[in-house]
Length: 621
Image 1: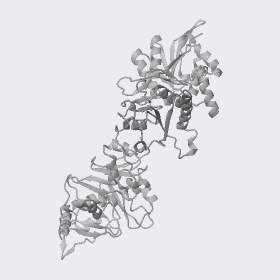
Image 2 (image 1 turned 180 degrees about the vertical axis):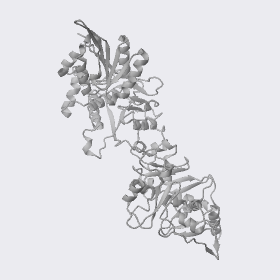
Image 3 (image 1 turned 90 degrees about the vertical axis):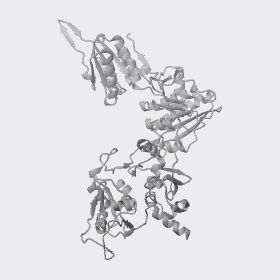
Image 4 (image 1 turned 45 degrees about the vertical axis):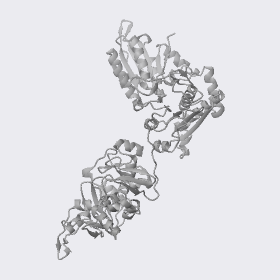
């Protein structure tokens, strides 16, 4: 008897079933129609039945009717005789009652929504296709927030998953925990994060913590057992089974255990900064690269595989030189689940993690390993987003480093000449940087052009004598075709009245290619100077030996990414002592197959940047 009384008190205290009337949903009924039928507002119906907003009306559902405003005549509810509409809308959604011969295709076209979005908003109704009489939710275009995809309607308080989204990145974006996302969106527990899925954004962080296959939920002021049951898709029986004390009522601050969905797969993200490097007598490196091994058709020639090919040649040569290196290789696929990989991989023995390739993925690794003592090497990405991480090494010199070298060279010989910058669309930003810098330090007249024939050297003819106006030309970029045009245009100018430069390298600048000797001779006529972070000295004995290793195993000359893989891995391991420590040996300058490395912290950056770009001079004969 005592338990029965307690159960009654529990239900009453949480405003679940006290003084309630119910209504069984029939075909074609809408929230609007039911509200009119019982003389209550739609808002009252939504508050009494939170599941309506989440799942829509389902035929056969029993919904609670608030009793305060119901008009009773002879013990019967007064029912209006007006017909209910097939379509009703509120601030956020349009509620559509499915009619015979209705199709998802027609609905998506009529309301300009995707099928994935509809299924996200109506998982139960659309699980097995449309059914006549079902009521589905469609975003109301009058009140839409579309931060991610302007062509797709996303309701306020929701997020449509796009390519590259991870639960970790979303937790950072919306400042709530990953566990809150799992708890607030039961579909994530079984299906995971999928592109096109529309999920609810938790309003407050820290309410839910997932431990031991349950959700530990902290009761908030205003919570009722009913809205908790509806929000987390559980039942009163399950709630009481896991929380017997709740039978005496809910109190703010109480922690409830709530069940996860059946067959839930939860990726628990470890907290950043918890891993510490094991200081042993081994050299251990981890290669994290997006091989996408699940797609063999793209595996052979993708950048990650080329980088790995170069890395293997480097490791073989290091082994022959007496370095014993343990290597762990991780396929990061499309680099969209870095946190999942980090959470399920023991990196404590790693001395260095080389990769991933994309800036965002590198940031996630660096954030996860902050304070660990493990060096993170970014072999390709060099964006400013990486500057805030200690123990992060940026291997590829930033383009601005190359530009600064040429800006300094121009400054040394500038005498008021017109300056032309030749570039393509891919290097427009670098050209803009160069232009602003030259204008600032020299007060020069700088023009950016995208075709070599737009570079003009004015001249006047007085009698039989030509008088040329001196100019300065700089090609910005590594477009080989544009490089050829640039050289041909230079040949048309008077070599005594032009100073020519290049930022980055193209084929016609290659001083080590025997087949390129005529172009180099032509460039020498102008005293050509260029900066590059990448050039392969095919005349050195060390380079010849390395190239032989590539040919013996792979029967070809290494591509640019293979060169990068070789140089990055060889340089980092070569810096390591027998315990795998290299953080105390960062400033030493090493020259590799094609790249040069010397790391230092630049400006306010916490990261170590490689600023060892090369300056190549081709003096006049």
